[in-house]
Length: 281
Image (tube, rainbow, N blue to C red; front, side):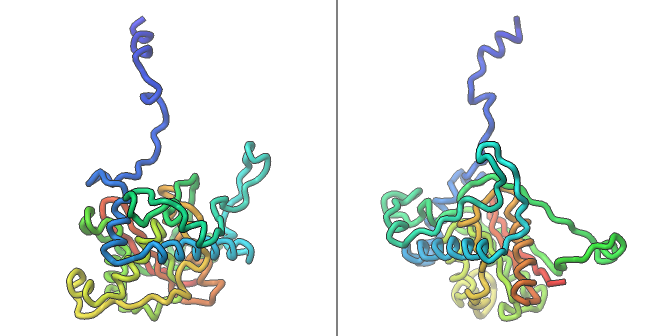
């Protein structure tokens, strides 16, 4: 009877599945609020964010139609009564439709909306990592080589989503490379405003002097090399799986675009950031 009494006091929320949290654990502020504030600090307009979101969806659609993103493993869905062979969040809309959406976080004057934010989605990823000698021993042909990587951390309140800027700066100094040496860029698109803010920070002398201890900016990224097969805004952001997706996409792009080096970067909770250099095998 003791167990029966105990169970009778439980509520549905006590036994239900816990959804992934979208609030920053160190500040209890949603990342959307942080992104809105970051976009404002770097002067990123709603127009720029919606245009970037449209770019992401358009490039993802084009990549699927061109036969790229082949590393996606089809799974059977009873609900869909068939195999799921591509991401179903890719939707190429129009600027007119995007600009009709209301702000999702800072209301009524915020610039972050459902359309220019990465969406939560199911997903999993895996990659095989080993030494070159072990790959030869097992008869595997490497797709790419991991040449260097860094992790960084900064203020989780005001600079929560600026990890890619700090990580890119540190990684380039560590390797002696410049942005011009990079053929492929794959950055996690948490929010369009966050991405553009990072691009602006990298291209800002003032930011470099105040926060990076440098006399001049890191540089301007060539957008013809940036997330050319879409990104998290269009493909979604399955927690814990996006990192491998970025790396494998970068490796495949190096082969498809005849490049040598790829730079992968992402922001993360806690004000963390990560970047790595991948070289085509």
